Length: 295
Ligand code: SPV
Ligand code: MG
Image (tube, helix red, strand yellow):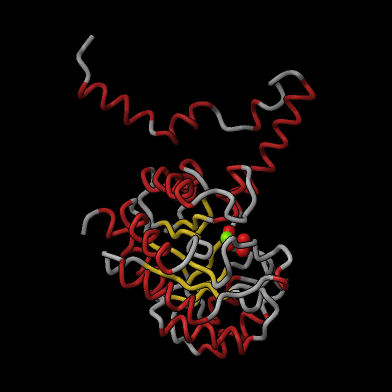
């Protein structure tokens, strides 16, 4: 294994292990590093968070190459696997093939695609009006991705949006079954309810045919042990770094503007040395001692 394939292997291990595993959202290099340092074994490169940090909407307004360029910074500064929220795969089966190829080249461990139409809309915005992809067409996209991946450990996760779009659990199970047959390594079942009832009903009906991944953004008050007992494979904390950053930046920006002074914020923000540390300044100093001409 080189470094790249081992990240895919790590993600595969997380998905297939009997333990409940966790991914934290990150949206740029520094947030990826912070996720790793906090102890997370993997990162969710959230479409919502990546869009938000660019200041655009979660409607594929950022191009997929802009997303992949950001992923490269995230992969370079971390040692843990990154799962990209690949929205709908940014087009048809052919765009999906190119995406998988480029993700593997940049050291990304896997991609999750959802059964909606390009350009996608965030699941929490007007969900019931969101049309779903045809099952056959979406299965073709999964197959095309699986057929073209070069590292056998690269993971393709199929996200079922049926519950978001107002369908019953039956339809979600039907779709998940088809996606699993098409080769998906795991199923992400998504819900926008504040209670996990339809997620648990899905898991009950699914009977562990493939690992199940969830993102409990809306049913956040559910104790994590409920998911563990239900046999969920992986939980995604999907947007919590961008939301933390936004709140902290708003507070500092308002305060500095109002005070025309830094006095009150200085002790409430990260010291400069912490930024240098996260950037790896020490490594460059050591490299200079090793490689630069002595003065
Ligand atoms: C994302 O993080 O972009 C997701 C998860 O797709 S959610 O926004 O919760 O639908
Ligand atoms: Mg998304």
